[in-house]
Length: 130
Image 1 (cartoon, rainbow, N blue to C red):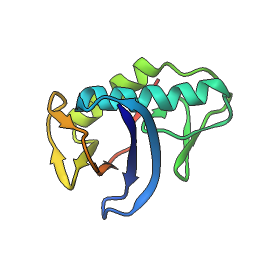
Image 2: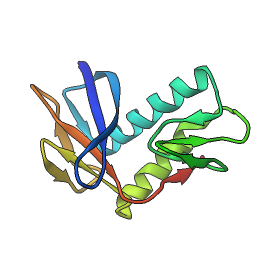
Image 3: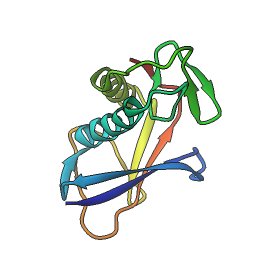
Image 4: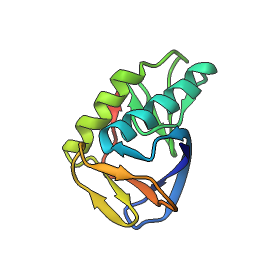
């Protein structure tokens, strides 16, 4: 298990942010990778809730502000609800995922994370959830 870096990118491929995920197994489904990413983002936020959340899914009741989302009142977020929204959005083409420049099209596709792996999340529409 190693630390995996996921980049968020624009539709043209320009990196706009990243998240490091520790202890990711060598084989993981895309669904589990999305859930792991969202769980990590929410856990980091919930340690110190502030007005702005940086993550894949816009929390319900928050407003987009640049690459973050502003909550009216800092509050704890539910990672499972956020992850559910993310998976549903993937299935509706709200964002797509490239692994080594190839699009992963199914949530249950297995990704091999050995050697140098390039993972990019490209958001096409705002993802609003928990």
